[in-house]
Length: 269
Image (cartoon, rainbow, N blue to C red; front, side, top):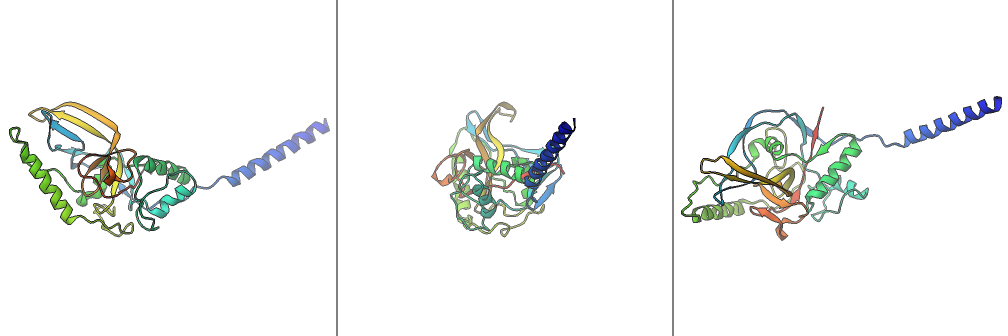
């Protein structure tokens, strides 16, 4: 009997020792990045998507929108140094943009951005993801660019819209900032979010939707395409999930962005 008791005690001690070693070996969560809190609030926002009337493109309408719950959004886009920590652990693909440690990471596709969100969630013990179009727009606040053409649709003369699109793109090209600056140094929105509308566009979790409306603007059909996602920046663009360099192709709607990066949001307290 004493032998069995001794063996049981020894087994318990060994198990406790192994458990303690495993507990001490488990990496502790690390602090997350600097964020600002976005509270649910109603604001007017140009809806996303490819809107058409009788097969012809039209501006999406503006609507009163509100995020369903508070979220925390990164003050700055993810930097090269931040992202390379994920690469070094084998959880993210190599970016194709400039490698200055303090620059926003660029040359990343939608899949890369989600891989980083998964890695950061595991590393911090917090739920991180890409923002929606509406969350990003609320964070950008006064710096969000409404890229609607603002012209009346003329079914008899589609050239009116073509000319307006050409003039808008020419104006953007004249004022376009193509220098990638260190993360956090470009500008600051009223919410505290930085680096809005410069040389880097940012991936969102919002799929491109194709919307058909009637003459009164009522929605007839809406078809989401989740192989294509909205990127926010100087203007909104729609790009396929695997594109890292939009200048080489893959832009579904609008003029291609110069560079692709991202920032994340965190839900909860």
